[in-house]
Figure 1 (cartoon, rainbow, N blue to C red):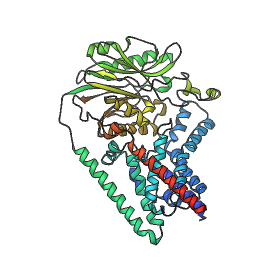
Figure 2 (figure 1 turned 60 degrees about the vertical axis):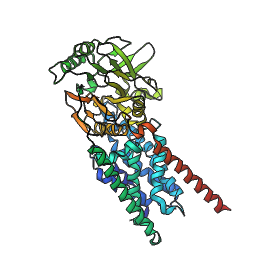
Figure 3 (figure 1 turned 45 degrees about the horizontal axis):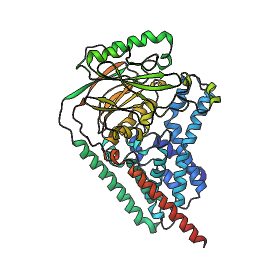
Length: 507
């Protein structure tokens, strides 16, 4: 087999195998070997151009497989095959650039005498660039921690190191074994050292996580919570003929009997089949607050004289509007269109028109059992948004969403399990209300305490402990993404060292 073809196939396999670690295939064990092919072909001394190309191929194939549901969603929305394929391919191509930069920068920086430290350089460069990407509206499904979503003991380390922590060690493990496979005999001692160290890291992280999971809090009085999952067909949701059916559906979910009278009721994203304004009470929901003496978080599309918002209303036990949260990070081409000339091509995805992002520092829902933060749909992808709510004192985070767009694809499962990481990172409860599912309660250790499956209509009754097991939240919450900053600083030092070496070599 020609060498170039072999390298191409190895890079391609890295992307595909890593994608299969995510929901719904969920083959998480592959994450410990899936990047070995890429690390093997992008070695120290490889040309920057070649390493960038191979890295981009791996990144493209990862996103093309893991985000195939983008194409399916476009087709569900009535977009023609050509534009649906183009959207999917272009998105995968753009997101793959990150992998190209990591591979190119790693192979460039890891020349002698640093080539023996290649596993460290892979981890540092990946984490440094990922740290920068996290501050952009990029769909970061390639946070490598996500590849281990099934293994809760491993996930616990992200409460200390943040969203990039576990992923660093996943990549270090792969790079260490790759280096062992291709290194010269004179460097075999270094290779064995890194392999042994990678195994120690994994065992240490597993031990820390197992210890964390063993610390079960004492039983305390709890707050009954009701999560509504109406399972409304997204493609009928805004039809005038469906209004009475949708309203009746929601009313039935609110009616008893209850196991315990709810103190907090959560509705999914855009639950009401009408546009709301600046309303003091909400006819469909306020009576329930009065009857059950409950707080409510209600997803709604809100319109004032100049702006349209994807929002959540906070209701107090008197049925009055207590607060208002407007989605901060909007979905490109779903909730706003960057370029007006494209609007005529995107069909149903732009049905409600361009929306306006909410304030960057919103108010929390104040209750007599603690503060509640909120994110809407796609915002769960951004770790810094959930952390910002925790920093302001939220003891629980509500994520309301409508994944009805995606039907029975991998999309809803990927979107759901991301919330597990937000819970662990900040050591808070996550309460998720999804129109078509998956609705759930996730505890601060990432354990799923209750859930409703996809495409199921029902009401999930769970509880929130009155006492907070982590009143100080996590180290990540308190100090931010210090690990990402550390990797960024080390990455800059690597670049300076490499440039200095290049200058001296010229002299």
